[in-house]
Length: 596
Image (tube, rainbow, N blue to C red; front, top):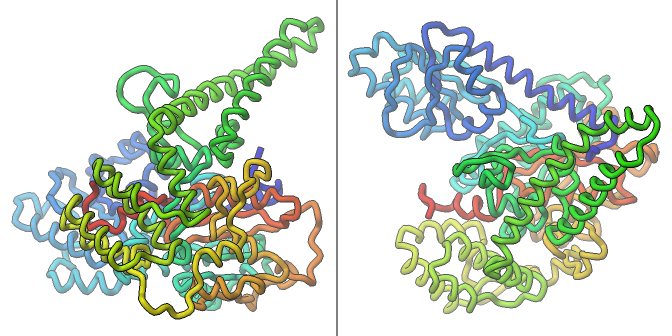
């Protein structure tokens, strides 16, 4: 099973081949050094390193130690010290300080420092090294790390701090995004139609168009990606606040998926011991591929049916008479055993999810309050006060308060002031900065006495048709949040229709402050651009590449997969993102270098 048409699956496989190019570049760098190497990594580069090379390979290449860059001085005995870092002011200042600290060390003259900027050098960073007096002590290079695939239809840049960067006004990552997409165009042709939704999405689009002209892409190359939609996370901060209710989404909420891995108790995944074990969750597990996009309420019945099917397949062995039949059964037995093993693991995971979410009713109460808020606008004031009284996680408290603020047109002055005071008293004065950041994002605000004709969420959800109380019957894209359709998914769905965004322009203006649009790239082969004048073969879908600037949730990706499976869909969706997020990670990105 694949999420994509056969032809499109091959295209995405080719995109995934960029990962091998990146890996070979890294290996080339590491093999160029002798006599011992130490890697000091930017936080953003720690995760993808494990996708490019494993520990045994690093050891064979002479890498003695790998450190995440921190303020303290790690004890390093290797001669060659390689920094893989993003070109950021605060990071390069740490590098400069580290080198200056080592100047007083007796072994300084025996060490060689090499900086690899990921993915490009920065003139500003080089000037900082000069100002700090250490430019002559280092060599400077680039490591062209771009998109890596988490799965066959999901690619990421691993820019884990991109959301914090936007908060601070640092737009460096927008250049990295444009560069990565332009690199795809070099492989697969200029994308005919580019649509953008939101301010940061427009910046990416404008840079991409300029890069396409500067790199002189071959206009004769038939584009294999037909449509690009760039989505600014800022236009929909409501969806990440919701608890994800797909099978994959709820695993992310409860266990936290990192690099397609989640950690479980050993017995859950068929192992022994007491230490949690990692288990990979991607489309290589055929059963997980079928489960991941289902609403959690549908998973139990699906697994029951799968168990019956496997049992029936095993029972066939009792009726085998002919040699040919026995041979066929033996041939499919390994696949059955693999599916059986996967079934047992997912039954264990589902049982553990049930224990975490149903036995105490705490989780279900939280979800019901969220859904009541989004469906009917029911305030959660009393429930939040109860949460604070019982010392529940600040992240959970803020997630709910931010959701109420955004869907109920902010808080009345006195209510807002009381919540603000209670948060600071219960969770610490340090969180005054957290609340200021959330206010800056428009997520937790005091209602203004005089409105300016701002469209409220009640109007928006009606125009966009975001609520489906019969999601369990329809099993459409709203099932990913038990009846709530992600705003992003609905806007993307509208963007690929022949009439585009015409019927929802008022909503778009509200969400984006009027920053949205479409660009037809001049060098692209127009006959491949999706338009009303193009006749598309009914049996072959086009490819729409959707890039989320600032992160995407697993459930939003599920919504796009479900959208591509609809009868009238002409597209396969492939998702790119700066990073994977959920409500917890987004709220924590507003914390001042601490997490409760």
